[in-house]
Image 1: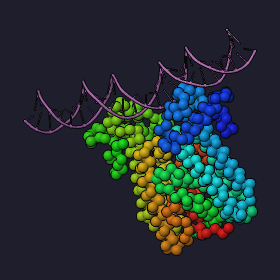
Image 2 (image 1 turned 90 degrees about the vertical axis):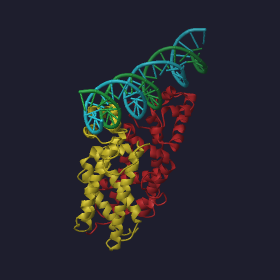
Image 3 (image 1 turned 180 degrees about the vertical axis):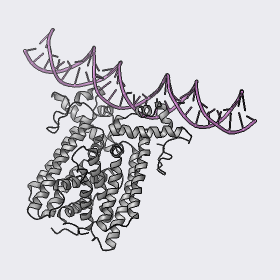
Image 4 (image 1 turned 60 degrees about the horizontal axis):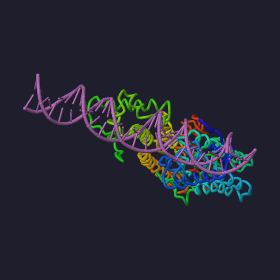
Length: 217
Length: 217
DNA sequence: GAAGGAGTCAACACGGTGTCGAAGAACGGC
DNA sequence: GCCGTTCTTCGACACCGTGTTGACTCCTTC
C-alpha cells in the first residue's frame, strides 16, 4: 500500500519527477476523469478509459498515477481545498447574527460540492473501496467536526446557546447529516431533499439542535 | 439485469426451483457470507470464497444465486424484515409520552442493525456498486421516511409539535442522519459517536428538530 | 557522439467474473 | 428393475480489468 500521504493539494500523489510535457498529460488525465465521472459512476470507468481519454496507453497512465484511486484523491484534494477556502472566507467575514453565520457555513459547503457534484458522488462511492480515500475523508471530516464543535462551545460560552448534548457528539451527528443529505440530493438515488430547499432544511435542524433548549416530555 | 423483485424475504432472489438438500446449500452460502463479512469487507470476498465456504464449487454457487450481490440482497431482506418487525412492535405498544415513543423507535433500528453490524457495513458498501442494492435500500428508506413524516404530522395535528419545516423534508434529513451516524458508529472508520451515546444523541436532535419552536435570531 | 534520464508501449502474469456442456445422482412411471 | 427426465454438480473456457516488465525512442547535455 503506497502513497499514504495527504499533505499539499495536488502534490506528490502520483510518481512523476517533474518534466515539461508530462504536466500536460497529468492534467489531461485529471480532466478526463472529471469529464467521465459526469457521465458514469467510478466503477464503470477503467484505467484504460482514463488513459485513452488522455491520449496515452494504459501502462503510461501508471507512469503518472499509481492507480485509479490516486486520480480521485488528487481531484478530491482540490475540492477539499476549495471548500476550506470558502469556509475560511465565512469565518473571516463578521456574520449578521448567529443564524446568518451558520447559514453561510452550510451554504459554503453546499455550493462547493454542488459545483463538483460528479466528484462528490464518486468520492462517496470510492470511500467504500479505497482505504486511502477513506483515510483522507476521515481527516477532512474530523476538521469540520472540530470547527463545528468549537463554534457550538463558543455560542454556549457567550450564553447564546443553552447547554445540551456534548458538543463534539452533536457536531459529529450534524456533520454526518449534512454529508448524507447532500449526497442524496446530488446523486438523486433514493428519497432526497429538493436541491433548492436543502440548505434551509439543514439549517433549521442545526439551529434547533444547537439553540433549542431541553424538550419537555 | 435479472431479478428486480423484492417481495417476500428470502424468496425468489436466486434462481433455484425448490428442492430438498438444495435448501441446505443455500443456507450454507448465506451463513458463509455473514461469517466472512464479519472478518473482511465485501470487496475482499470473492464468489469462490463463498462457494468454498459452503463446500461447493464456484459454478455451483451460480446455481443458487445469480451473483455475490444477490446473496447480500437476500441477507438484507432478512434484516430489513427484522427491523420492520421491531418497528411494528414499537407502534403496537402505547408509548409513555412522546419522548418515549421516538426513543423506542430509534432504539429499535439501533438494536436491529447493531445485531448485524457486519451486514450493515457491507450493505452501505454494496450500495455504491450494485443497482439492486441501491434500489432495495431506496424502497426501505422511503418507507421509514413516510412513517416518520406521518408521525410528525400527527404530532403537529394534535398540537404537541409546532409547525415548522415540511414534514417530509424533515423526515428525510433526520432519517439520513440516523443512517449515516449509525454506519459511522458501527464501521468505526472516521469520527463517530460512541456506541453507548448514539441513541441519546440522535434522539436529542430529533426532539429539538420536531418539537423545538422557531429559533429567534 | 555517448551517457543518461524521461516518456512510451506491447506483451505478460494474475485474479476475478460469469457461462457452457457434459457427467452424475434421484426419482417417478411403467 | 430399467428408462427417461429433471435436478445438481463441476471442469474448462472466454472475457475483462489490473498492475508490471523490459525494451525502445527521444531529448538533453556535456
